[in-house]
Length: 238
Image (cartoon, rainbow, N blue to C red; front, side, top):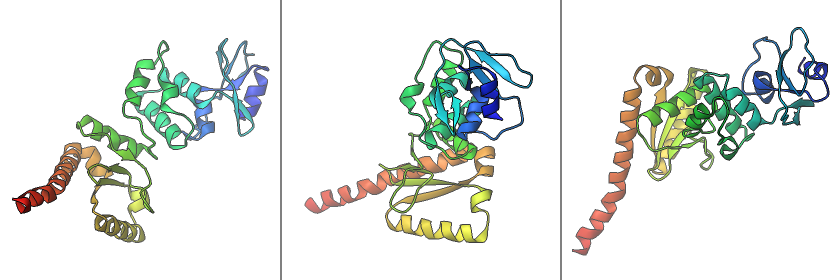
């Protein structure tokens, strides 16, 4: 369908906007008309066309399409904040864009895109997007997101403090075996000196201040722990 829509709109045509985002895997297709951008697009029923004299082109899965960064810039003027944030974070998670490619000005949605980039991270789903936003709005330092540590990939980790926050979703953590695996993983991390916190979708949505308070307390506790050996050494030296 996407390839046919591009071919129908002339030699300069590329898949673009929401259709390009679907092709890249950022969203599921919702049966809307495919979107195509071309210098002089030929009008066709069932195809939504955009006209542009500056076509950026790459090929993905055999289909001419706007590059990921250009796709996000195009979407910035059309998607609501949450939708654009999901697209940016998913593109980062897939390694399809760099933040530096998206620092732009002078186009519709540029301010919204820059706001998203201030807290953008390679999250894996909308749930992690919301958790990251809650942490940012709570004034907490920005954590590493989905960065491998040995055999484990914590959802959110403050490496300087050795504090981890795991965002447990019902889809991946709601059954007995998953909970047992979570407990075993947490025991290993805690044995390595990490402070491991867990939160749920319900808590993040209904009590975000509680999540922020728990993380802030853990960061303070970590700071106290690190200071204690130094205090002991000072007393011994005395």
